[in-house]
Image 1 (cartoon, rainbow, N blue to C red):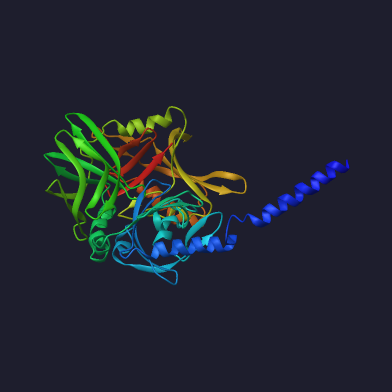
Image 2 (spheres, rainbow, N blue to C red; image 1 turned 120 degrees about the horizontal axis):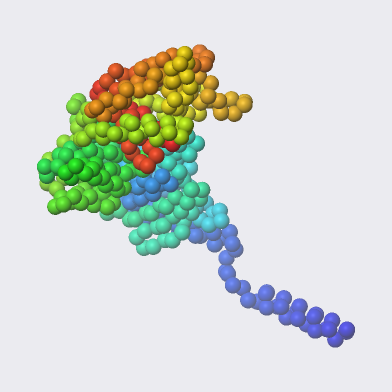
Length: 434
């Protein structure tokens, strides 16, 4: 036993001596961390023309920024989020902080926060989520001319590349501001947006949230469609995947201009002048779509649902159905019930109550008329349930809008979704999903 104790004492003494003499680092952990942060700070500030930055949001959109990091933790930025952010440089603050790893934090509200703002009215994203992006980014890898970062909450990908003088000048001189005018396609009041190229007429559908663009056209009697994401650069709008139709290939839209008076966009496509304008009807009406939409749920005693209500004359949720207290969604339920021997359809308003989701009130409609030219026409039968006082305006405006005497086109947008578009002028529509 004594021998083992002697060996243990000798081992302990030897180990202690090694620890004391063999120092791996010549600085404390805090000194090393502060040194690393200072190095990152110097790198950020060292780019004379700033940094080109690209963010891919959780909703799939690709957004560009230009950052200039200055001393005193100030950052100056542009963004292609909208025309204003593309044309006006904004100053805010940033800081570098050591958490589990070095982190770049944009710590006052700036253009980068617009993407993640939880108010869906700011960026078109879901309330409480925005476009699923971050404003705190862990520094992953630093190269000579680029820095790779990852968002700490949504894992947003952020890439910084040293900008050239021409990159910064393009933001300052309004080049990016002009290109982002393409987003004004959403301000064309008609649901159908259309242009002609190479003798072919195309409907174009742009989703500025996911930054996707779709083309719809006809080859003989066959409808064709193509969808791709897009992003902006100094030249204009770039299609991530080029659009090809026969001998026509579209890779970019350039020289983009928005005419606020005519509500049209002019642009160059393959050296051709193209005008995107609103139209009152589809290129070719899907004559069977209204009955297909109606019968899809009628056959199984189900319903179509809509959250945002009607878009009218450029205004989303024009009748403010989402502001009804406790509002959850609307339903259109064919053959919901009968009254006096008449079977009626229901436009119902579902609200959240203490008892859960409740279908408390709605408007009843007679069985619709399907016209030979591909429209559906509704006539009201009456009101069901008690409409709360605070819901009256939204309810009656929506119920009345359904009875547009010109009827509606139905545009199938997916395997279980349709848009119902007013045939009178295509300036009112509602989206339905199962």
